[in-house]
Amino acid sequence: MKDVIVAREKEQLVLEGLLNEPTAQFLAVYGRRRIGKTFLIREYFDDRFAFKHTAVSPLELRERDKEGELLYRIQLNEFAASLRKYGGKDESPIKDWFEAFHRLERLLEKKRGKGKMVVFIDELPWLDTPRANFLSAFEHFWNDWGSGRHNLLLVVCGSATSWMLDNLINNKGGLYGRTTREMHLHPFSLCETEVYLHRRGVTLDRYDVVQSYMLTGGVAYYLSYFLPGRSLAQNIDGLFFEENGFLQTEFDRLFTSLFADNDGYRRIVEVLGRNRYGLTREKVAAEADIALGGTLSKMLRALVKSDLVTTYWNFGESKKVQYYKLTDMFCLFYMGFVQRNPSNNRTFWADNQNSPKLNSWRGRAFEDVCFVHQRQIRRALGIDGVQAEVYPWHESGNGDAAGAQIDMLIDRADRVMNLCEMKFSQDDFTISKDYDERLRRKLAVLMERTGGKRNIQVTMVTTFGLKQNMYSSRVQRVVTLENLFSI
Image (cartoon, rainbow, N blue to C red; front, side, top):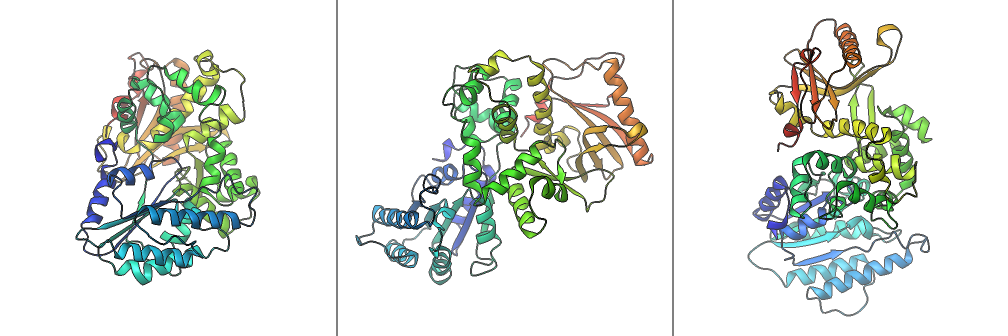
């Protein structure tokens, strides 16, 4: 039902448009695990499908089914069961995927009507088991039959982003250019997260909604485990630190579901997680012990497309030098508090609310939240229509430049540069004498690096605002949570 879908307005418009197209349509939906792909498709079409099938997860079978034969037969048997559920009469076992899709063709031929027939295959990559020839059969189904049925809308979903990119969206073989639309489903924004939590009866103020975002990254499935009537700290303890917490095993499942060679991807993420400002491709290869080449490039591209990693250029360096930075907040939280520092304290979060470790994490995580909400920051500054490059800046060296680091630079085409500092504070942020000295040093280094060719505006992005004192006048613009929660 459409009324239970939170946000996703653009995606719903795409689905509506595909239903009204006069020709056959092939939509590929992808995105990180738990992002809500299945929910969106199922609820938008109100489960009214001419045919729907969900592949069987291989995760529990991989260890005892090394050759993939058992999973292959299970996938075919379950596909046959789905055919019968939607009206197929053939009770005999399916020999292979070519026969499976021929049976699907016969089923759909009997259902021809005036409107679009919607066929939904969920977790399509899981059907491509070793030596199953699934992709050849699927290509033949679409190229020989599906693409010529003007009343057909084929929707496929997959969390295995690398498979979806390589075999559908960037396919160089029989499916080259065959998808008519691709839909990359991203995590919720802060505003959407707030709406989602309120819909579920979870009442948190915006200070706590931001913290919930710091550990879930706006992933709806993770947010769905927040319980009404519990404080933020109680919910965090319940998810991560209590015995059998719902998200204690999610990190491992995230990689096994997204990527076939999940060990390499996981090593890259763990290496990036230890490097706050990211690494170049060459340094990723060295630290993760992965050879430089096309395989590494493909893996990094898949991590970016999965919304786990972000690329950026460091101000003052060549655009040929690209950095990869881990920005998935769930992964960062898990590695920082569950994996690297496991605690037997079942109320760890509630017991350490004001500890230096948690306060330090909040500060770093707030920077990541701000980078995800660049559009809202630019709108608050009144420059959403101005061309600009946005990136962090870090520089090591000698003299004045030693250790210089700026949370966010907005380098604008109108020759103005916003030097943005992010501060997560329980009250209006107060600029102290020491902080003012650090800020002046950063400003001086940046002016030197720009050669005086930019008008630099010091911009504070904080929770509730800036307290006026003898140092606050150095800040020209202030952005608050109210701005970050805008649509």
